[in-house]
Length: 320
Ligand SMILES: C[S@@+](CC[C@H](N)C(=O)[O-])C[C@H]1O[C@@H](n2cnc3c(N)ncnc32)[C@H](O)[C@@H]1O
Image (cartoon, rainbow, N blue to C red; front, side, top):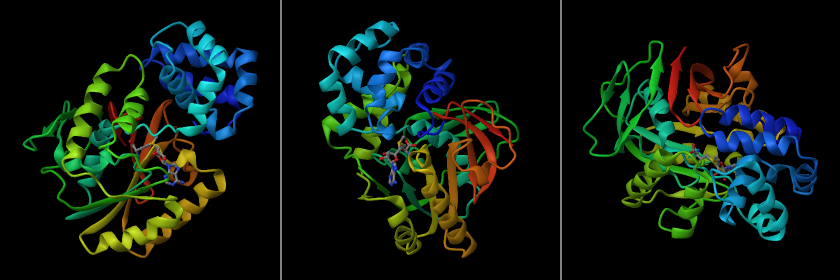
């Protein structure tokens, strides 16, 4: 799903993406796509602010119960329009989903360590702690002994189960708006971004915030295009720099996505870093190439070469 698509297509795409994971968000997205009044409401927002995750989260922040029928959302959007609009304008969808680590760690296992992780679009930086979780990749195996929470993801294909946890010598990142794991309001907004029926994700988020609070990550504030090369140089002093990102590049406008692809390809070609991307199938078209990405799946790639299709929140990984 791209964020600058026509808004009806965007909401229909989102309904497909949410199907199975959140019946409520699927219903809400389909409801919006067919509702001329709400579409007109959305049209008054800047394009990047019309995204379902943000609009739905803002409505929930202002009391829309979820799960609930579409009409409940509609009432909050239209009757509390100024408050919801203010929240949409002030906040962003910074969903930080640590479950994605279960799809990233097998790829990290292909990189010689010790690793120096550079996460671009890190949000609160919860995905910077791959060494602090246990993993289960049924039916293939897992990794235990971290002392941290368990992340589990279903696998198909010949997933290379790592023999050991990644050794992380350094971790850092950049975000337009880094969220501070010690800030209760910021963490409440993160929890509010978790889809309605997903209590397990809410629980995982709480545990992940606890993990990160023990060693709050240093995340620069700024645009990833301006900071990634510098961060790679800083990381190189500590280990093998690995630039990683998930669910981030869709937020860039198309020319910037192309610039980012060129930048990363250049850094990898110069041997300055490895690059793990985990993005929707249409987000980095030169990475996806001719692959027919199953609906709702991300393409997980190492150095620009796809290695897996991953569930957007890390619930499954299909190794290619
Ligand atoms: C959906 S969140 C994903 C967070 C994290 N990567 C994860 O997988 O849990 C996207 C993040 O990208 C950040 N972002 C979007 N555009 C950015 C840019 N141009 N530079 C830096 N960060 C950006 C947003 O602020 C947000 O925190």
